[in-house]
Amino acid sequence: MINRNITEWLFYKSIYKRSIGKDEWDDDKWLDLHFPHEEIFCKQILESSLDDFVKVLIWVFKDRYPIEFSGLETSMYGLDEEGVPFHEEINTRKLQDIEPMLVEADDFQGIQHVSIKFKESQSNVFLWVEEELEDKEYTKEEDELTVYNLTDSPIDRIEVEENSFTIYVNQDKVVY
Image (tube, rainbow, N blue to C red; front, side):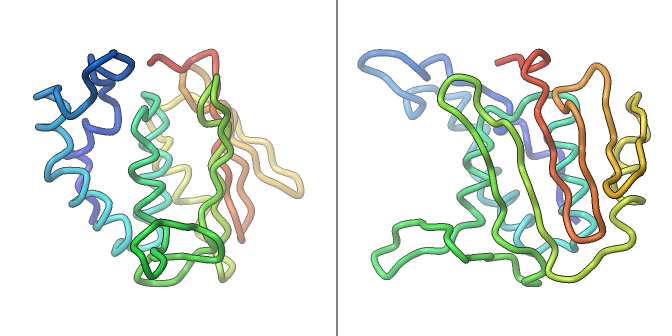
């Protein structure tokens, strides 16, 4: 099970993020939050069950915007022979149950959406999403695609099919 209590590093923006002459490594709080928590959390993501993985991805976005999401994203990358991360056609999850995670982001607004495609159909994915959203207000639209529209959340909507799900970020609710 993924430990959600060690995730504050995902949401903390260093006071030195855009400083001249200093960076995150000069920020004691940033260091305390990241080490060893980031490594432990990312390892748990790679070793977790599929339902826990899906629920935690939703949880990461549903109340706050994860400023440091790139740390989680890069943990899913493979490494080339020189140790440089790359993500093409690589899935480093132990269970090999998803295709490589796709994150669409831009330099000005950050993450637009996060998409996961399952290697096998998951009829329970709708239940996983609803269990994670039970404390949020949302509407559900069912057609070829099931769409969960959230209110008062950094998540605008979650589009779900048995073979995939995508979290769309509500840029109006993102607080850095």
